[in-house]
Length: 360
Image 1: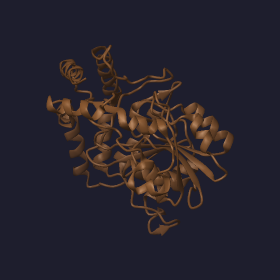
Image 2: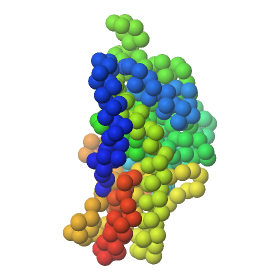
Image 3: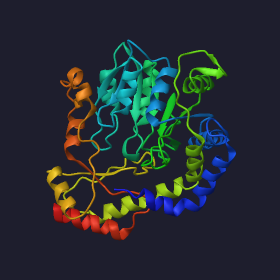
Image 4: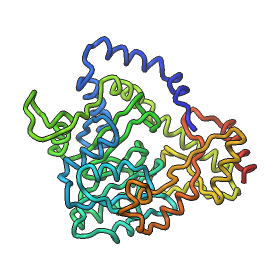
């Protein structure tokens, strides 16, 4: 599905000196590498503030906490996504409210969002799924009208934009994951939050460091969610290649589109309002599981993102199992992800397309 070792081979001559620099410094937590990474990502996204944290999930939790979301509050989020957004809402004591998706983009449908907002709604976590921005301008307009906090989950979409503004620059807060498989991946867990609000940035810095701004002075109950210097140095090195790698993903998507033209599958839809960076290349296919078995038998990797919507997961089904989200549930039955990573080549893409046509 992806080749992290191949990426390392391509970049090792830059990564190893960066790691060595940190090891030789003796400064491994909250140092200059993290400060430089925050400045670089803030510049890239186009916002004044970025705060590095330990993971993408903790970016979501700390963002909700910083925004004052807690017990008695409702937070709307899509169900067809990874569980992290719902987990974060639950962890701060709020109640997730699941909304359905646009069946073409798999992202939160603004009309479905409006339909589930209540007097208790305080925030929206909008996920930019598979590498394409949600309809974030429309979602932000709803949030402004209803006075809701807008948190962008940008874990799969760094570098994507909507109407020329990169994801992470639209909401009250933008949350990024640098898990190793992401378009910009660390060599361990790592995350970051972007914001235009200086007060929120300061609160995030306290929360990630045990609620402290000064040594042994703890103003709030916080977390240990600091990004280490080794991961920051690796990410800084890889930042210089992000746009090139995203462009390669788009080229591979075009090759898939050409190779699967006329096949009985639903190809990824680009809404035309911004750049899709193809973190995942998902097709839709009937009899998905049988097709996947045929691919596996032919030595072709594939994945299912996501086989069970969050509201149907055991952790949430008792409360939300009766919720009807037809587009989310249909997508979970039909999506199939094909190999996608920058070092992929046309020969391998051709093999995948041929195998898929045979499986169909």
